[in-house]
Image (cartoon, rainbow, N blue to C red):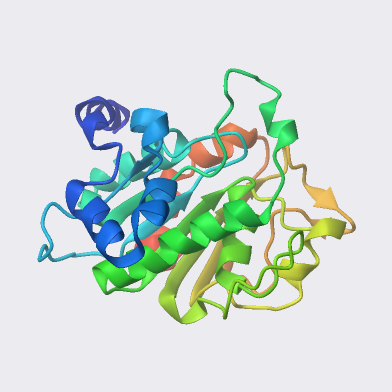
Length: 262
């Protein structure tokens, strides 16, 4: 399976950007500013991925929006995740990601500079809405690390904590399954996304490790990566932050396809 995944990763690397059809649709519906923001052509193949080859292409599966972690890009964990789903019958028309912020930029401590600001939330919310309208299907979301609270706020909507901009109503009705992996879901600055229960989607799952060296296991008397109202969880004992994403790919697949925890 690992060998198959590596072959897919290298053979499909040219697909690590939005397709011409999706870019054209974004331009037609939202205009050049939104298309540029979501496509992230400035980051090359690391900036984004997803889209149909032609407008009438039919989807077999609900599309997945991957939301990357702090100081990462769409071309890292999301692309690895998407490549795994490709091996199990998914198509690029069903797999999407954009890059908020600018990744590590060669600085191993870049993660310390990023916070959950409204700009990132609006970008992820924009992609979720765009994919929902573009495909005409409910959307699944797989979020990792800081991407988990970013994606949760994108779905919740309401006022941004930092800028007080109004994002609009919750996107709950558009989300089938939400999977949050190694996310920092609790803390003083995250009261907003924990003030409502069950808005993340029809099916809510978390994946985390007691040995996570970045987000930890317990904060403010709560298990850091749990989401109140979740329908299931996968808990590892000793995996680190990166391993929790990489080694849980089969778990993610079953959560998305069958709404079960293996």
